[in-house]
Amino acid sequence: MNVMAKVLVANWKMRPRTEREAFALARASDHPQVIICPPFPFLPGVRRLLRHAALGAQDVFWGSEGAHTGEVSPAQLRALGVRYVLVGHSERRALGETDAVIAKKLRAAHDAGLVPILCVGEDKAERRAGDAKRAVLRELQVVPRGVRLIVAYEPVWAIGTGVTDRPEDTSQMASVIRHRLKNSALPVLYGGSLDAHHARAFLEQSDISGVLVGGASLNARMFHTIIRIGMQYE
Ligand code: PGA
View 1: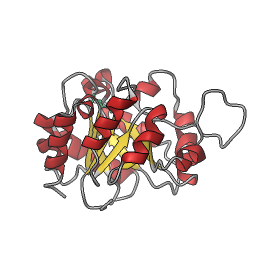
View 2 (view 1 turned 45 degrees about the vertical axis):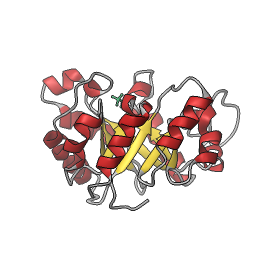
View 3 (view 1 turned 90 degrees about the vertical axis):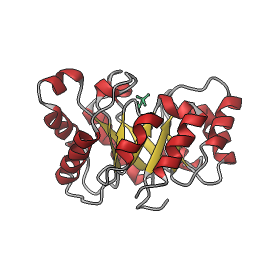
View 4 (view 1 turned 30 degrees about the vertical axis):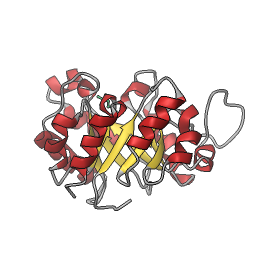
């Protein structure tokens, strides 16, 4: 992937229902700037048909092997051709994933050669109280030294709600994140109700390195439009 090009992540979450639908969607989204994160069962099949896009997983365990029922190791993902992995998505934090677990997952993913995409973002109450930056900085405390990663800024109140952040506010937050992690070249993405109508306003901001798309990535035409917009900017 061209480091300067915008990164377009498709987070399918627990969709689509069938492998057939997954393959059709993967074919339609197969572009060099795209990282496709399907549910685990679709990873091998999607991998086989991708020519350009990179493969990501939606979660990973921190242990390398052993008696961990239901978990998937970083090495197992690597062996499937996975290169990226979402870590700390707010939907997983809502199920009880803690900062300590997220820190271990970041380290384990990195050590196995995966690039973690760490999801951070304040909730509605924090935003209202003017605490968005503080909340994000707190979530960044878990990043272990020397781990190469991508950060996705996804305000919790914007995910799946139809309401997006303001691109200028995301731009500012991206600078705060880079400053905190002392890495001016860190890719920082925006996620949260991003669709074809809002994509340009985010992607044209030079501080925003790309987007993490949930719902709209399940709509092949909509995602194709987002890819076309993404191709116009660096
Ligand atoms: P959404 O999801 O685009 O459907 O809001 C984004 C995400 O949860 O990563």
